[in-house]
Length: 342
Image 1 (cartoon, rainbow, N blue to C red):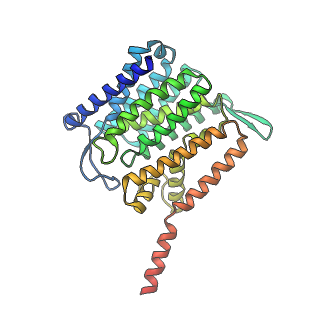
Image 2: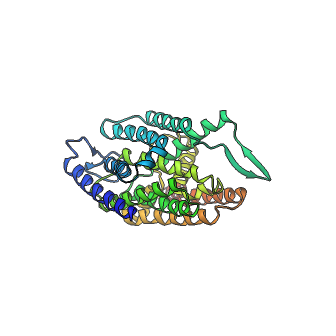
Image 3: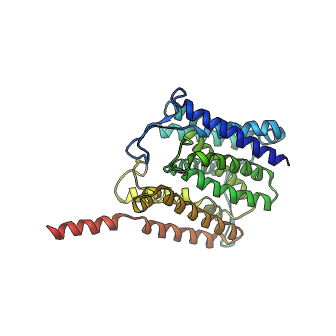
């Protein structure tokens, strides 16, 4: 019954808060000005992430204060990520600074709790453990990388919210399966928040989540993923949050193949490719969501499977996606056609 009241509270607070930001976005300096990579052409309100973050925190203060006390390192770290995201929404922050603060947040969580990646599971009959001096930098690398990956995938109406919803749904199932209250409660609260947000963010959207939303979502998903390693194989987690990982890998590989910096922004993300083919925002987003549903279900199915098997399957998926979404073949065909017509 308590979860019903929490869900109702979050829904009301989110709806009221989002409508307030939509109405006062200009005064609050929460307007997203389009650039050459944007899918929208007019300034649009952003900052729904501010509302979802505060509804998440306030609901716990009111209904489950002990939960915040028990997991205070997570909430301190989440606050750091939220603040840098909010500052970026209002003023603007360089990507390197954002990554620095995400790293600091991860360090805080590492120092105040047992949060870390130091167990790679069993490989070829051997249990692989990371020493302390490698566990910390690797944990920071994973959390920062995934948080940034989800931020980068936020390029079409409903995309980041829809992908995150599917991921949290899988987390909720696993949290209930293994009776983990932290994973279960956090996943449930974000599912309710995302449902409300998607009402206003689905195409044609009235508001964006902004970095205050996407960074917090990415950070939370990465934290829950690492928590899940206590129960499932480390490689199965790759499938549970697959789309942001696959998208980032493909974009970086593609840029390197072209002799460009892997960190230079462009329009080669998966959602850019899908939209160029379909010319429909909703259809492109649904393709991405269906992909994530498929990967999440597969991740649950192989959650206890051999690490080597899982990794080989994931690498095969990367290979397939690289070829499906590689536009170099299309460009070669066009070049050859132009040359033959001359």
